[in-house]
Each structure stands twice: as structure tokens, then as C-alpha cells.
Image 1 (cartoon, rainbow, N blue to C red):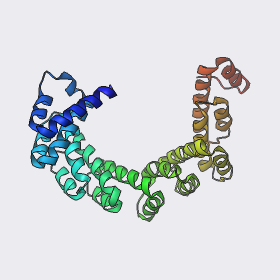
Image 2 (image 1 turned 180 degrees about the vertical axis):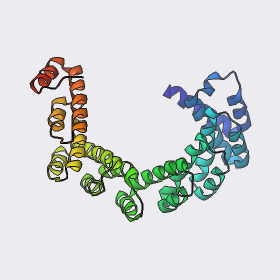
Image 3 (image 1 turned 120 degrees about the horizontal axis):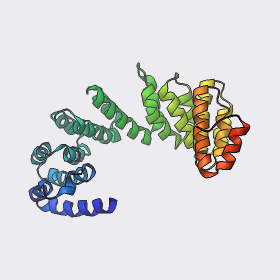
Image 4 (image 1 turned 135 degrees about the vertical axis):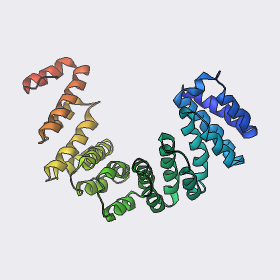
Length: 292
């Protein structure tokens, strides 16, 4: 399917570059049934609108607005995504002229991503002006791009806000962990307990474990906060699940919180049972833990 999409978009891009209206007419032809599948329709519409926008932005935008749902988001992405790479302010203004809905929510996220490459604080300030759902999409996109470039600056920005940042931690911390796992882990551990912090801890330690398991283990063993240690252990256990279920179980039984502990034990046992049912069943019997 990926190869088919690539070939189709390449051919369509050449056609759209020479005659975008002809390419658009082809896409809307009812006989092209595959073009109305969401993923393919999205890709094809985006290819046409991207080429059309380079020649006539208003015409490309008007065409995008006329498309059915399964193609509209892709067309908006092509038009405003191209514009956002050079002029995110203008793209953001045009995006808000579109009807609210999934397509607009998708494109504001793309605009925020482009904007954050050069001016992340401006992108985040714009996100704050949007509706709740759009704000969530745009903020997450901007933070993801910013944290890929300068994660410590992103973390400092979040710390400076006079508002709850728990929901943003899983976006920033894992990206930071790929560059500086110890700093990312320390930052997440310093945050108030919440679902976002717990998720970010597990993801951060999973990434760290795949890079340097000894250092990640040492960090976990040094934690005195039960909640921090538990969710960090969850990251270590998850990292071991697929290739070493017994080690995942060794970590899981060290967790103090019963709900998280039992969940990871059962998950580890089930994965082990699929690979080696006899060994998994023996461990379960020895530890009085039925496999559910």
C-alpha cells in the first residue's frame, strides 16, 4: 500500500505542477473509488493542493474547501502546510477562516509545528488563542518540535508557566531522554504526581534503558519517592518485556503500588506464556500468581 501511494502521489505531483485543475478533476471523478479511501484520498489531495498553492493560493484553498471529508484534511495540509513553512502567521490567519472540525484541527497542528521550528514561543502563544481541542493539538505539536531541537529550553519554558503542565510532560520528556536521559528523568521526577508525570517517567526510563540499562537502573534505585520509583520501574519492566519477560517480572514485583504492580505482572506473564508456557506457568505457581 505504501508503494502504491508513493507512485500515485509522484505521478499526480507532476500532473498538478503542469495542470492542477486537471489533477483536481481526476481526483473528484467518482470512478476513482480508491481516491475516496481516507488515507489515500488524504495523500492525493495534499499532493495536488501543495502544487496548486505554489501557483494560485486562493484557488487551491477554494478547491480544498469543496472536497469531501476524507480528502479535505489532506488538501488543507498541502495548501496551508506549504504556506506555513514560509509564512506561519499568514497560514494561521487563513486556517481560522475554515469551518471548525477535524480538518481544521489537523491543520492548526501542522502550522504550529512549522512555526515552532523558528519561533516556538510565538507558536505556543498562538495556540493559546484557539478553541480547547485545537489548542491541545497545536500546543502538543509546537512542544514536540521545540523539544526535538532544545529540550532543556522547552522544559524551562514549561516550568515558568503559572499553570498545570502535567499533560505536556509525555510530549517533552521522552524526546529529551533520547539526548540527555538523566536530565530528563530528574526533571520529570521533580514534577507533582499526575497521570502525565507517571506516563512520562515510564517512557523516559524505557528510552534510557534501551540506551544504558546500567545507568537507568542506578537512577531508579536512588529514588526515595515511592510513586517516582514505581513508575520508573514500570519503564524498566516495559523495556524488558519483549526480549526478557523474566527480567520484566523481577522488576514488576519491586513495585509498591498494587494496581500498577499487578498490571505489569500479568502483562509480563502473558507475554512470557506465549513464548514459553511451561516456564511462565512454573513462575506463576511458585509465586502464587494465576495467569489471567
